[in-house]
Image (cartoon, rainbow, N blue to C red; front, side, top):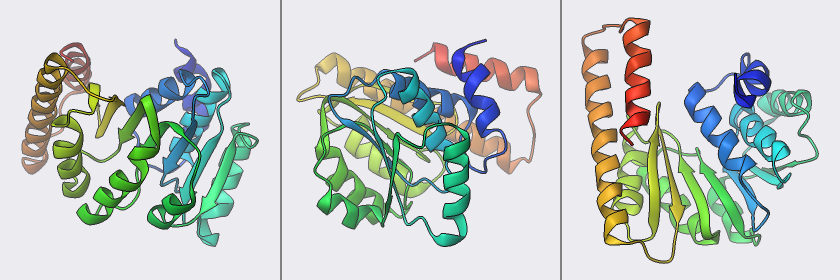
Length: 234
């Protein structure tokens, strides 16, 4: 049993949100690996499920500050704050009550890890990309949620990450998250691998869409095997 399963899953079990266990663990590990060359920024927090994964990961690593950008409306901010308090990460988390696009204009910290899960409209996702990704340090990481079935994020990462010359080590995390390392210039081998992972993600999307249309639920053993295979072939 790893640290995420033992220490973090119980904290997020009752927090509403759309992260798979694999996505939560990926955020945890990315945050834990941060060294402090920049801060961690989360675009879209809702009630704090992803914030807890990032915060506990950071706490297990170098305790890099986290900026949680979200409108933080009154009706849900109380839940967000209570969940963050319960997870023991209050001192690390700095809520920014704002839409992500205007918040970017005033944000001056370098970013080591950027997690984007805000608006899903194509134009707004693209604006998030164009305003926030330049703030990520060379060698830093970006993670975009909902890049499988949701058209806006899927299209943005399709051309701006998977087909870019500025990212390497791209991978798809079971559920809907695309993760990539920002670099000054990737290599031909990096670009080939990025396209390969895009093919894997597209196959997952088409296959899962077909299953949903047929309204079939895969047996748990088959689903677990598929998840392990997806990780292995990347």
